[in-house]
Amino acid sequence: MQVEVYSDTVCPWCFIGKRRFALARRQRPQLNIEVSWRAFELNPDLATDGMDRDQYLMRKFGDPGRLQERHENLREAGAALGIQFRFDLIRRMPNSRASHALLAFARVRVGRRRSARLCSARTSNAVAILVIPTFSWM
Image 1 (cartoon, rainbow, N blue to C red):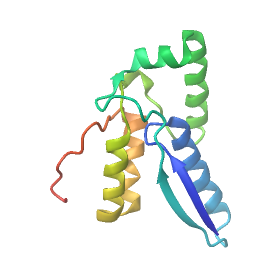
Image 2: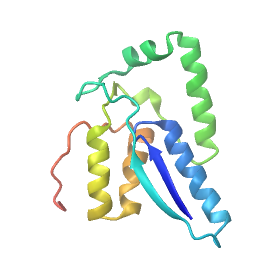
Image 3: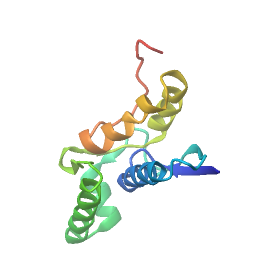
């Protein structure tokens, strides 16, 4: 079975979906599933250096109460999967294009498991990948 997953590296719901999909796969080990991960940009028009996260969220959600409710839903869904979202640490909403490029490179260079840490770094540790750095393993 071929499955294509479209995901953005800055999307917490995408990260939750990735974990849920991994759990479902482990529950059905007899299935031969080939997964192709595809880049998707939630905010393709966002400036390359991103923007202030509070401003971004106010534009998107408007009402602070609505935003708080959404964050709480994400925290609960994430916690059930062992994900600790730290929205309080995120200061900028990044354009995800560079992170998609880095992730594609990492999958080829260091493997899928190690490249998956990029998603975790973004959502749990507030790491913003705004430019592609030069690593010793490149």
